[in-house]
Image 1 (tube, rainbow, N blue to C red):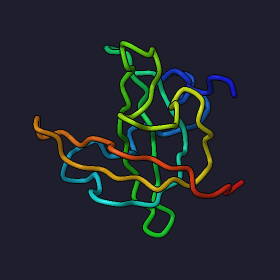
Image 2: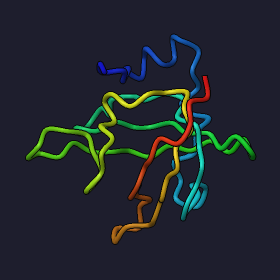
Image 3: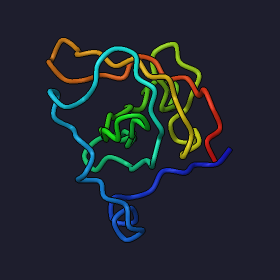
Image 4: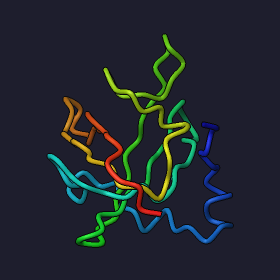
Length: 117
């Protein structure tokens, strides 16, 4: 696979609406969630990939960021298999999201579950 993360400006120019995706901790679902990965954007101030998800059943949109592992140079979750630089967009994922010790939402698990295109 190849890198399929875009810049924020590229996303906006392509008609994506990043601001429509919640990032407030009170608006992001917790626990297990089935969501479609709509697009991914490089973070501006750190080494990360912000993933923009939409729950097909509710239409709820939210975003979570996966940061680069400094040792492996990969954008993977702890003990995860997906590299978020390359994982496909437009597909459904089973996610587990939890609040971390800083009070922020953290993606703990992500599994590709279905081809939706």
